[in-house]
Length: 232
Image (cartoon, rainbow, N blue to C red; front, side, top):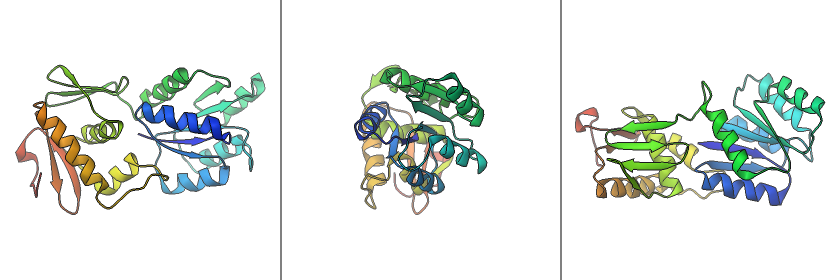
């Protein structure tokens, strides 16, 4: 899942980036409203964490710009403005949640996940394919009931493929979901990530297959019959 964080405080922005990535999200951070709006135009986000006090604009204007263009991405406002009028204004403008500074990081992450579990959101509680189970809230993966260890990138890749099981996921879609703007992505980054994930799943007896469809993308299945395979 890819999140957009709009926060002008560099220290807090860095902390949000670090903790949200630990929680399994791909994160893009921007401190200017114009940069964030430009990012939304070219990338698809699962949720937005929005500060109101930005150097070049009020965060309320960013929220209004998103909603005016028909963008329904969940928005969590993160601000020091604690007045009732500000909270009501934000919610009426289309915000989905409101967190006051200072805050506990654990609560913020829980609220983001709660937004994504709402109807139409991006998170389901558990995913099951073959003998593999993925709890998307705790970020725990088990194979035949036994927990396995995966890196944050491998967790994100597995989640993307499990959510689209038996459907093709393009390489471009995986790149967008797995890597932020500030991360260096080589031409074979996705291939390397898929290879490592396959190797780990195979080593623990996972009864799923990640098929490579050359020039198209990847498909996860529990049967070789679900795809014409050109290398696995």
